Image 1 (cartoon, one colour):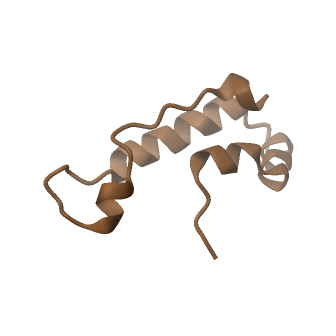
Image 2 (tube, rainbow, N blue to C red):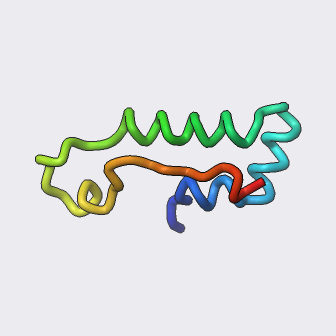
Image 3 (spheres, helix red, strand yellow):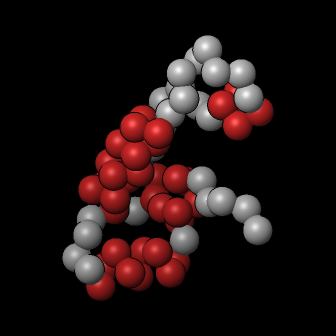
Length: 66
């Protein structure tokens, strides 16, 4: 089992259905994902496989998923 990327989460039909049911916009969910990624990002000095695979910033084009 793999963790979903923010892009996969924005495309996932079940997540989108739950967002609609909860009246949460795709843009606000994307902003939440971006804020969480920034909050949980590791400093560049940390040397680990996971840290090397984490992007410095998340740039999510919400319009591409609407």
